[in-house]
Image (tube, rainbow, N blue to C red; front, side, top):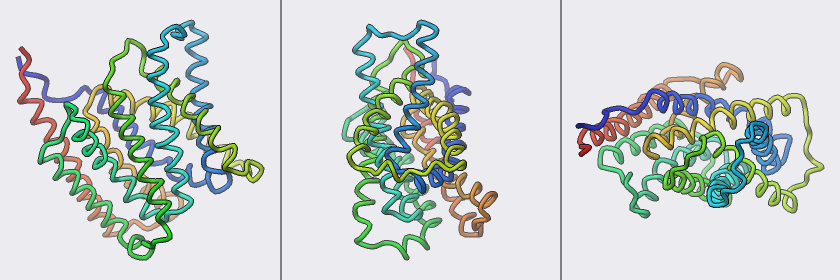
Length: 306
């Protein structure tokens, strides 16, 4: 019997939610870190979302307090993806212009590919996937070229380092999360990861950031509410669900779609540019996404189930 030729509709819908919602969180994060220290802002977001999820499971008496192997595993994923991945990416925004940040953030599929090769997982990429990732990366570079040529300077080295480490932490956590199968809901996994990641980020923030400088304007509060409810509860849980049902390389293509969504949001709300350059970049990015997906679909058709 041949394996199914496509992934489940739920997995695709989860990935679509990630692409759209996380694309809109650029604006919310920008508002937040403008008035609140970035690590503190990230920690509060993760802790609020995590405690909301875990509180629901505690009230329903479905919290597996006794399964320390499971709890430790999910905490480790939270530290990698949220403390290192999300936390350092917000710190990097203090040093990098948006063009360079967008380009390096879109390098996530490349980082996924490298780690899959190094770790020799079952999801090592093929030539068509590598070609698709390269085309998508070219689209991001073309879209951000003006800022890149104006802003590339040795003074941005710390921002580059922070953002690269953030990508490695996020990618490694994503791959490791697929190495074990658990009988618990994906939502519970996400809740534990958020609390663990948020707690460590808060501990790091305390000696490094000036909390008295935080200004909780109404727009910051609304941004936090949006990030907690949609950015974390919906999108992060959707990301973990998509990871559980699709190859990490396919899921990582959200990093190409997010900047496009962010541009549309910026155009609609902030009256930012949306010109021919963006159109060409969009075509390149979508071509790259198609090639990656096509490669994995062909691979699935070749798989035979005994």
